[in-house]
Structure formats: structure tokens, C-alpha cells
Amino acid sequence: MKRILLSRTDNLGDVLLTLPLAGYLKAHWPEVELGFIGKAYTQGLVQACTHIGTFFDRESILHQPGLLTDFRADALVMVFPDEAVLRAAYQAQIPIRIATGHRWETWRYANRRVNFSRSRSKAHEAQLNFKLLKPLGLPTDVDLSQIPAWYGLQALAPLPSALARILQDARFKLVLHPKSKGSAREWGLENYYQLALGLPAQDFQIFVTGVAEEGEKVRQEKPELLALPHVMDVSGQLSLPELLRFLSECDGLLACSTGPLHIASALGKHTLGLFMPRRPMHPGRWQPVGRKAAYLVKEKDCYRCKGQNWCACIEEIRVEEVRAIIQTWPKGRE
Image 1 (cartoon, one colour):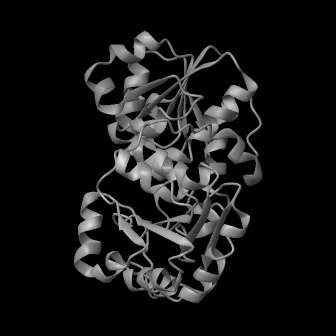
Image 2: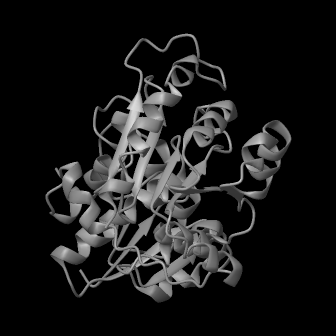
């Protein structure tokens, strides 16, 4: 194999959990050239992966099919189905086109099909991604403990000078990412406020992150959180490459199942994810995977929140439980 394309055209966390495939392929074939097809907003994350040489914006290749032809890929690994991209790969005559085997578009445009169910599996999302490498003749059963070595993230973007100066503070720099743009069940802003209130200002500098709309929600719904003297609002102020650099300079992060949770864990930071127990959003499928990653979940039958955008079970995670874990982190700082 000389050139392989990976494709994942959904959200940030999903793309992050796909990047270990690149490190794994490089470990087996050091000379292979890797490209990645994704949505434009994930470009900063993919380009931070040292294993990937070329990023292709999904919309660009659909409007300029010659981009795929020029790359001369030997194989495409369609990690999650995208009919338009798979059709473009077929038209570009990429010799090996790998995808899951249970969708009709796969039978039209893929010529290597792998049959498995993500929703019914007990494996983690990152582990399931490796199943798509089976047609390449590589082992596909990996342990979660192996995955952190294959991320290859390198955060190099400069930070705004004012923020860079604040990060020189000797206190433990904790990131709270309370919102999820609807991709996960959230813990509740009152909980984040009570948590921050109980973390001593002499030991913790706390940052609240999120996109601009999420920051506005926090300011409207819980201004008391941002009014605390050791809390700083940086929501909506950082590009994706800057966010990666910012998280690499901080010490720990707390969030529900979001992209920043997975990014921080991939960067080797202390991370604590807060989860609901119901499939397919449970931690068995989506827990953060990193050297210092952990999660909390209430092991119970989570039936009341089915079909709802809230979860009573995640709200049952007590502030004291979360604070007790976070307060052990400074002792383990490197």
C-alpha cells in the first residue's frame, strides 16, 4: 500500500476517534501516505495529526472529483457511511473501497464490505473503527489501552497573547465544557456552578469553553458561574487549532460526551466524562480514551429519558463525586 484515504464526515468527536487508525496504519506500513476526507470544520483537528499528510474537504471533492483521482489512492476506508463520498471514490476508480456491508449504497459503490453493527456492539467506537481495516489484511482486535499511542496529535497553533499569559498561572488549569450542541445528555449548569464554587481559587484556575452560541447560553442561564473570580469565559474565542493548543496547555477537562472531551484525553490530559447509561450513548461506546481518562455513570435502567433531550440519570451524578475526583488531579500533575 502506497496511499490510503480515510473518510469520516460527521462530528468532531467521531473524527478524533478515527485518527488512531492513521497511527496504526503507519505503525504497520511506515512509508504509506495517508489522506483524510472530512467536513471543513474538522480540518484543524485532522491536520494536527502527525500521521496524516493531506486533508480533503468533503464539499471540495464533490465539486472537484479530480482531487481524488490526483491523489492516486490504493484504498479508501469509509469509516462511517457517506454515499456521496463513496460514489466519488467509485468514480475516481480507487481500487479498494471499504465500507460497512449493511447499507444499500455500500453494495453499489464499495467492493470490500465489512459486516458488523455499531449499535448492538459492546465495543468502544474507537475499537469498532478498526474493523474496517480487515480487508487490508491487518489485525482488527485492539485493546483500548493500545489506542492512545496512535493518536499522533501535535498542537502547534499560537494562542492569543493575553490568554497565553494567563496560562502561565501556577494553579491547576481546569476546563469546563458544559454544553454539547445537542450531541449528548448534559449535566446541568447548576452542577457546574456548584462544582466551581467548591474548588478553591488558590488551587484552581477554571476556564469555560464552547462555541459562541453555547457561551451565550451559559451567560444567559447561569451568569453566576462566570462571575466567580477564578472562572474565565473563553467560549467562542478560539479557532479549532487554537482550542487544541489551549487544551494542550491546560491540565484537565470535565465534560459530557463531546469532541473536546475526546481531544483532551488524546492529548494526555486528565479528563472526566459524564455519561448516561443507556445505549448507544453509554460510556462503553463513548468513554474518553487516554492515559489519564476516566468517566462517571449511574448504572441503572435509563428509561425515563428515552426520546428526550434531557437525562435524569446523568443529573444524579453528584457534584461531590465529581469534585472528589478532580481534587486528586493536581497531586498527579507532571
